[in-house]
Image 1 (cartoon, rainbow, N blue to C red):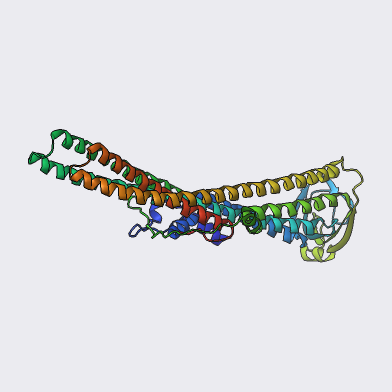
Image 2: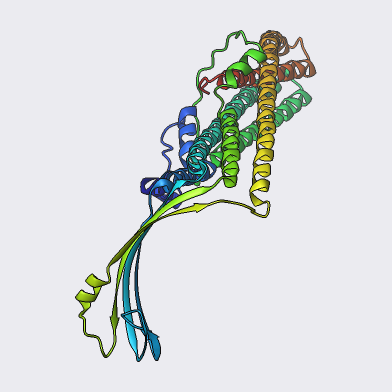
Length: 439
């Protein structure tokens, strides 16, 4: 427990105490690992789990006898009970020592049920923690892919700016040689300026998406933060049926497991509530001694302690006859909580199925979009190259060249978007089946 608190304290220290290393691009695995170690939601869930562990420990020790020691000192003035247990007139002093212990022998099996309940609650809290970690993994992967997409769009914009810059240089030379008009040169410069603006906006989008990812990772310092651009090689993936994916996921997803454990806990709660109707038997034992002091005291301190030493052992049977319907209502509430937990479990299963179907549909749509985008990009690239050659030879107008260029830009942007959508959605589907969320 001390180790956990120290770890959490170190995680929540000032930003300067643990600076991230930006000397190299971060991979998805590094981003995920950092988020799992520093995310405050996970830190909070970790504390919640540890509280459940403390509750379990408390429940497991409830069977053990307790022990209490008592020391008291009293002064009486006037008439009072003396050391011989008779009333005397005069001032007296009384010193007493005692030890006592008690333990339940039978409480309607409430104690073992509470122990089982605490253990189930701890397991559920552990699954809640794992769910929080899975949520962070998905969020980090989604933000990471968004940065990769913006990188691609920035690259497309930069290449188009280079094309326009080369065309401006070419037309500038032709204009100086009297082979191009000022209008053609002005149009090309306007196109170059527009491409430059698009490139600047793309750079801003990259920076914005990096900031979003850094904030998700709880990076207090993020200047210099950048990510690795993995080589993406996509191929057609045969996706399983959503029902098959759900059948695999329902047995391993922590959100489902947590609610199933809580359903078991609700049954234990009913048993604990039912025990309130049963008799309880407890054992108690103790020992003690005392010392009386008056002006007429003849026995010494240690002699009195020895002579007044006593012990006792007792059994207590408590039979509930009328609890003002408290026990009955506790049992009713426990049963209603169980029904409510059954509904909650079904709701979580329905949400999981919905998420899986959405991910599967997204993957299918992304696959079709990716295949179409690849063909569209190849066609647009070929059309642009032909139109560029015609434009440079004076056989195509600037408008025709610009339209071909715009189609190429759009096709490359669509292809980049389809690539990363397909990449993320297919890996997300596998993640629901228990796979790792990697690129």
